[in-house]
Each structure stands twice: as C-alpha cells, then as structure tokens.
Image (cartoon, rainbow, N blue to C red; front, side, top):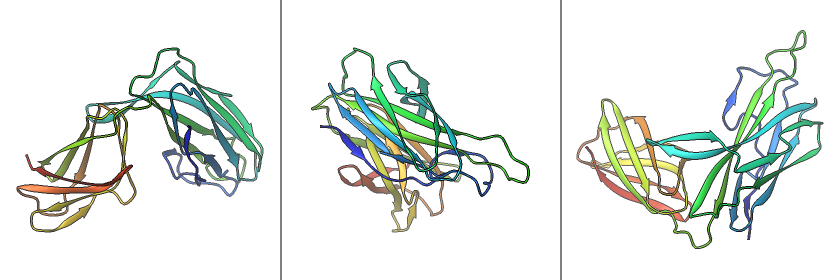
Length: 238
C-alpha cells in the first residue's frame, strides 16, 4: 500500500530564495508533502496548485538524498525522474507531476530522494517589488517491505559555546525527529527545535550544532518526537 501525507503548504514555508514579495507573488500549494512507496511500487503523483493571481513557471527535479559527515547531501540522479520537469501553472488549476523510479535495481532497505520544486520568477514589471522565488523540498522514499524500523543511538559534546548532538540510525528506514530538546543534570531544558528538527536516514548519521543556552556538564537527556512515538535518550557530554 502507498503511504502519503497530504498538506497545503504556503509559499516560503520550506527552503526558499528571494528577499521580499510583490503583491503578485504566487502561492503554490503542494500535496503530498511526503511520499513513501513500498517495493515493488515504483510510481507516485504530486499535485501542484497555483493559488496566486498570475501564471507561474515551476521546475521539478529529483535528487538522491544521503547524509555524509552528519549533513544532508543531494546528488543528481537518473534512477528516479519527475514528469513533466517544467510546468506553466495557471491560477487555480491542479497540475499533476509523476514521480517514477526507472532503475531496475531491487530496493534494499530504503532509498531516499528529494523532489525539488522551484518557482521560477517572472520578469519584473515596473512598479512591482521583488518577486518570490520559492523552493519546495519533498522527501521521497522507496522501501523494501520488512525493512527494519529506525533505531537511534545518541552522542553529545560541548564545543565552545555550542552543544553538538549526533544521532546514528542503525535501522534500515528513516527517522523523522520533531520537537528536539535537551535537559541538563540540573533540570534546565533547552528547546532546539519547535517543529521539524530533521531526518536521520537509514544507516546514516545526523548532526545538530546549536548555541548552548543552559549550563551543561556531565550528561544530557535528549527528548523529541519520532515517527513511531516519543524519543528519549541519555548521553554523556564529551
């Protein structure tokens, strides 16, 4: 069975470029905001809707998503494609994009991709301010049924005035972490992320570096919300 999460995303809610907006800036809504496909399923659809007044041009590309040295890395790929790669979107109309895994290589564990939708700015008109250039980044996962669930182990370190948290996922499938926070041995708590903190891909490591706003010594308790429930772990400071 295919698993989708649906939502309407206001412009600039995800990664973006641009400074300010004109009154003619488009409002692109994208659904779903997450695509998960169990093998052997290899195709899904994405719907874009222009809620603004003018015509919008959007470019759609797919990148392989990995994590190297704790950081996200996007690499061009031909294993998964998006069609059409370019759209001219009239106001109020749904536009369907197909996402297709074309490689015949069997899925082992989980493969992670990002579908990037870029709004291409129209030519600036006289008397109109800077037009938004919006980027949406949609996680796309192809996974092997029965692949192991995420299993995190944590490390914590004090680096100057920063706290560095490292999460390693020994499971095959990704973990999605929200509401990430730490608590010191004295009971003081610092919230690191109110919403989405990030993903830890299967067999990968994710690192967060944040300014420490509480006194840290000895160890910290790490809490957050994962896909399958609350996250709680202790890590001794290095």
